[in-house]
Image 1 (tube, helix red, strand yellow):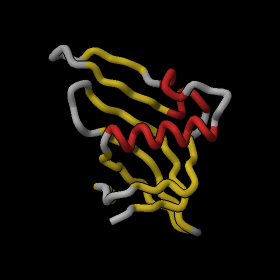
Image 2 (tube, one colour):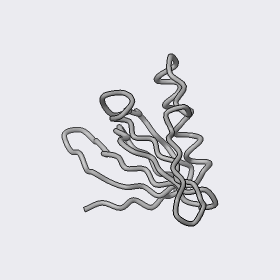
Image 3 (cartoon, one colour):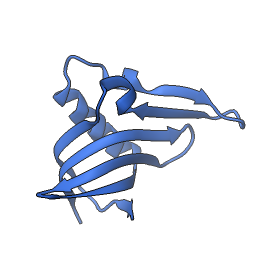
Image 4 (tube, helix red, strand yellow):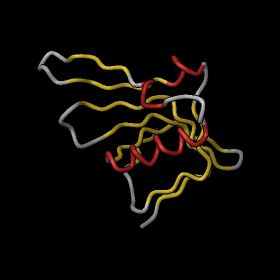
Length: 106
């Protein structure tokens, strides 16, 4: 089952080294409605998101925006906080995954 979002405002992406999940904090927008959400995606999906962001922002190296922090157990936490680097969020129009994804929202 495909998952498609009309507009996604990405505010934060984070993951730990050695983990198989990537967490994406965002706001999903459709017409006049918006819904804050956290998506749990794979690294293949992360590559899709980074490629889309790179296409939208060709003057920036999106992968350079990730910060690395050493955790207590020796693993690394990688975080991209868009507000820290762009002054606002990254927007992706027509984000589509070829499978269903987990979406956590309130």
